[in-house]
Image (cartoon, rainbow, N blue to C red; front, side, top):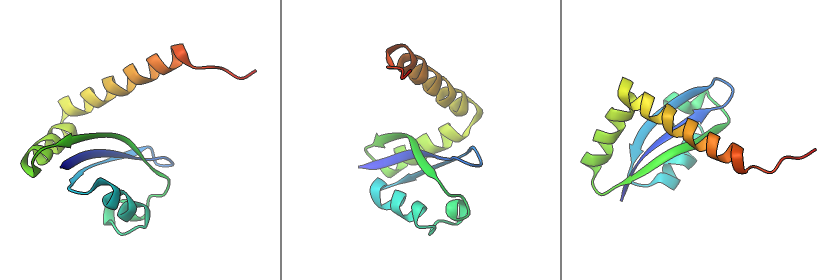
Length: 93
């Protein structure tokens, strides 16, 4: 199984999109600073991922998510998620 993932660098509010065969191992590498793009960025959070059957599919999906249409797709997915969470969220007073 291969994965396409999107990480968010909290302080910089920047996204990193990539693909991997082992998502847990790749996340650990990012958090340990062993990936050049994310080494200087701390507080990484996995905000989205998809499972793909082949590395070709994962790479194709990564390319799409980095495109203008793909960025709009992710923005709409995040907006839909947060609007549904907002309606069902318990609030503290």
